[in-house]
Image (tube, rainbow, N blue to C red; front, side, top):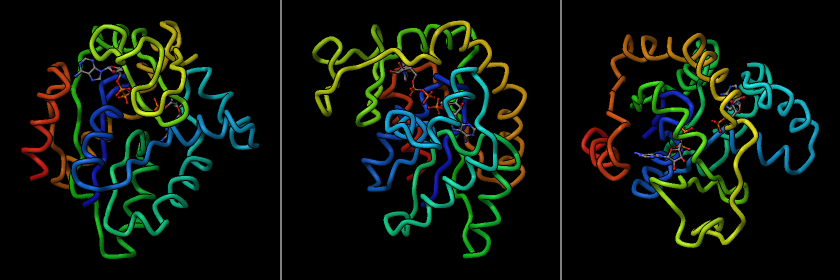
Length: 213
Ligand code: ADP
Ligand code: AMP
């Protein structure tokens, strides 16, 4: 099963993608996590990506597409995967579609996690992230058991530079301009499903499980 998570930055894509991945035994692939690991490791890709990420812009398609295609060609992706944060542009979706068509495959579900813009800034300023395992928490809504420490791996949690309010507003604009058109793209292919991302995370997950079966 191949699942694409759609939604604004901070809608809860990563939170739900992790839960889906665990329940259905699929790899969770976050292009944002891959970029952050490269930034942390000081790779050439990380240095390049950081310029865009810190500015609230998208990393150029040429770079992003290559990373994604490399990742989904790994053996653990044979039975499917959950994509979180990819595609973010129509050209990215077209590249994925073409790669899948060559194997007679397709995206099975594109889940749009729908959250109003007014709620996004609050979600992002309260987000605390684990750079080691990709765990995501919220100071108020989804706090870790021990303040500042990741439940899953014990590492320190951080406020991402790109989650500061001024950058969040830029990212929201970029989302509306470049990523939201993917809703129509997947609707036209008959695989779009929408869930109300303003609900509690377990309720959102129950709605997703009802869709995925
Ligand atoms: P995305 O991957 O779409 O950018 P995240 O999954 O990282 O979003 O979630 C953004 C923030 O909102 C995080 O702090 C997360 O803990 C919190 N969050 C996620 N889902 C919910 C929810 N249903 N209700 C309240 N807060 C949530
Ligand atoms: P995320 O962790 O999904 O919130 O992504 C963090 C940042 O990484 C985004 O704001 C972009 O700058 C960059 N990024 C992640 N995925 C993509 C993508 N598919 N295309 C372009 N940029 C991306």
